[in-house]
Image (tube, rainbow, N blue to C red; front, side, top):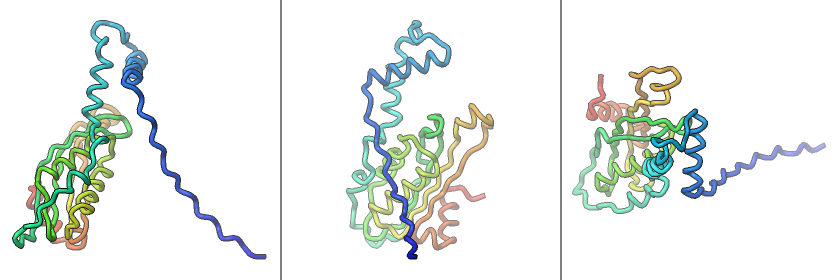
Length: 207
């Protein structure tokens, strides 16, 4: 009797939910206010749903922006430059996808160019695009590295993010001084520990 080869599971993509109207979003805020135990119609809270929806539009504007487009304009005249390009202490303001609580910190980004570079403000913009979404710090770190690798095809990329998460400082374990560090190394940064060490030293994170 011939045994059948087990079928591989089909991986289905998660459908994107239709975006609610602004009015529906404001009504959801009113529901949360009432659930918290307050009256959404009292004077101090009447305009809160509008303000919250406006804040969400700003906090999560990264969903409407494309990092590949930001990195599409490159400069090919590098005059033989082949060392690291490093940006230090890029502000990170994001929200964790588990509690929609802020996490705030700094990003450090480096890449080893091949035959093209990109304007340094574009690297900052890419960090901001991924930060302005619901995130985990680990995912965001990997996304930034991949976006740079895909667009610039560098010899390697190094990313470090150091951030404090309010989902553990203002709730849960209530440890206010704990920060989380994530790193992602690709290409020569991944294969060459000396490059990793030099990157960490140059960004001022060496102990």
